Image (cartoon, one colour):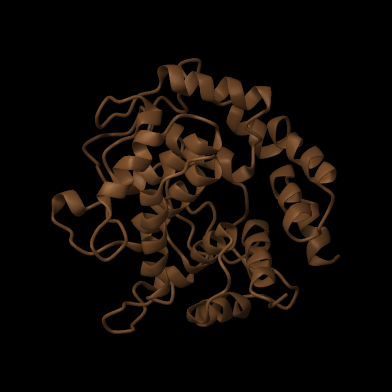
Length: 312
C-alpha cells in the first residue's frame, strides 16, 4: 500500500484534503468527498455532540465541569476547540449541518472571560486568533476581532497572550494562532491594509527565527517546536508554521531550509510521519493512535509542505 493509498483509507476529512493537495483530483471529486465530513466519521461525531444551547461540553473555552481553581488545566472538549476542529476537518460552511451548528453558537454562546458573544471575541490574542479563524471560515462577522488583533501586536511583530501581564516579546504560540486567524479573515473577503501589514510583520517574526530558533542566540526556542502534533490546539510547532506559510501562498524562503529539512528527516522508511507530543487533556474522541505511531494528519501535512517546498 502506498502512502497515498493509506491516507485515502482514512476519514473523509483526510481524504478530501489528500485529493486536493496531493492527488490533483478534480474540484468535483474534492467537493464530493468533502461533503462527507458533515455526515460521516469525525465530523458527524463532533456535530452531534453539540448541546441544544449551542455549546460543546457545557462551556465556551473550557468545559462546564472544569474546576476553575485549576486555571492551567487544559481540556479540549468545549465550544472553542470543537469549532477549531470542525474548521480543520474542512466541514463545508454551506452544509446544513454547519449552518445549524454555527447559528446555535452565534445566538447563544458567550465567553466566560468578558461575557461577549462568541464571534465578538475574548481578551487574549491567542484565543482571539482561533476565534477569528473559526468565525471567518464559517461566514460570521468577526471584523471586531480582526481590528483588536491589529492593535494587540507587539513591537517585534508578533503577539503574546501574556502582554496584558507585562510580556514585551512575542510568543510563537500566540503568533501562529493570530496569523491563521488574520489569513482566514482575508480569505473570507476581509480587506484591510492594517490587517495585511500586521500579518506580514507576524510572518517576518517567524522567518527571522527560522521558525524555531531564538533571534538573540540562535538556539532552539523550545525543543517541542521540533515535534509534530495534531490537533495542535493553541500550540506551535515547525510543521504548523510551514503549513501556514504554504496555505498563505507564500513562496519558500531560504530561511525555511532548516525547518523543511527537519520535516523531511522525520519521514519513516514507509514514507509516513509519526504523531509526536500529544497535548494532554480530555478530548471529544481520539482521531489517531499513540505517540510514536504513524499519523495520517502529520503525514498529509508534511507531504503537502514538502510538495510546496519542491521536495516531493
